[in-house]
Length: 166
Ligand SMILES: [Zn+2]
Image 1 (cartoon, rainbow, N blue to C red):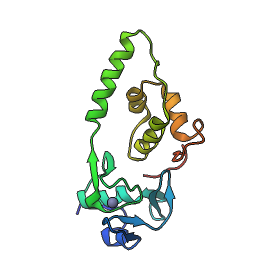
Image 2: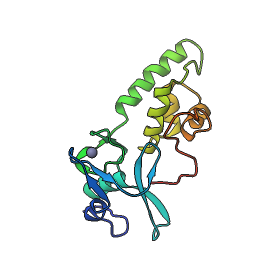
Image 3: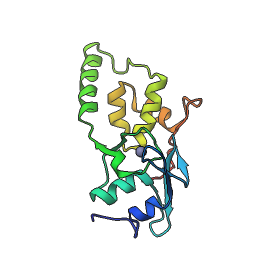
């Protein structure tokens, strides 16, 4: 069903996981960022996130923001994955943006540690720097440095620019 990459199916994904008591399929291969599983597909010459691929197999399209209902980043069980949209985030961004503009200042917000962790997760899940910059009310260069780990080096989950994972 749907567009597949290579001949990967759910059986292939599941066979590379161990199931925990919560029904999570915990990826046993390589991990990136905060613990997202990924694999390299030689035929495509690219890396792919295991959870996003599981979503693709079941739904036939890549998720926009692939959220875990179980909060286990390494989990690939499609029943634990939701495709969030950015509606709520963007609504927040607009409200924050208006607030910022009302003050006549462009970038008055300062990132907090939890923002950085969240942004790194959001990036893995498909977030773009412009929308993250709008959401957090900071410059694109600020959020990019934070997500890629050039700043906030003491926090986990940095997503390097060259990580090239789909
Ligand atoms: Zn799970």
